[in-house]
Image (cartoon, rainbow, N blue to C red):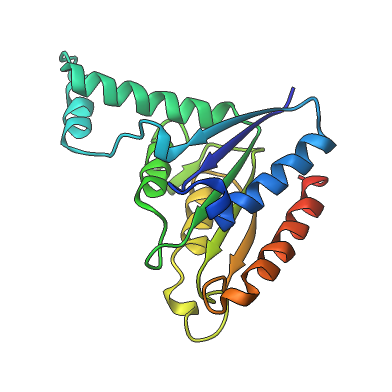
Length: 208
């Protein structure tokens, strides 16, 4: 049975989020095309996503030296381990996220930090780092208020390019994106932009 992990990175209700709406359209179509597959949802803003903070860094040092962890340290390290194992167990991963201030929401960055783990998703070699995650398909559905894929704002786009860099770094080459952009430039056109993206998402569902 194929496992699909859906990672949502927006604190808004789904109906208020263009990225979540398109993701739901994709998942509905995907489930119709692949009824035997299992879809698991990870809502980052309603889950415990530890930051790489002082507790975590200290805990990693303690573990390397065989020292006992505090309760807080153990909780955070255990959760980080769960998140990367959950990511690795999925055959396909679908993300939805908005662009905020030229980048992703902070919990999206925290999640990507959580799945970039030396020895699990990549390793260091004499020739440089090598990704260890192979054969996984990934889809990113991203909403943007402005236009960043072309024109003068392209140079400050730090979402899709960053996401693909991280995925490639850990060994994932099958990365597709659906960008819902320009939704804040002219509110009268926002729904048309959404419907065009939703149509693309539904078409992709049969091939993903």
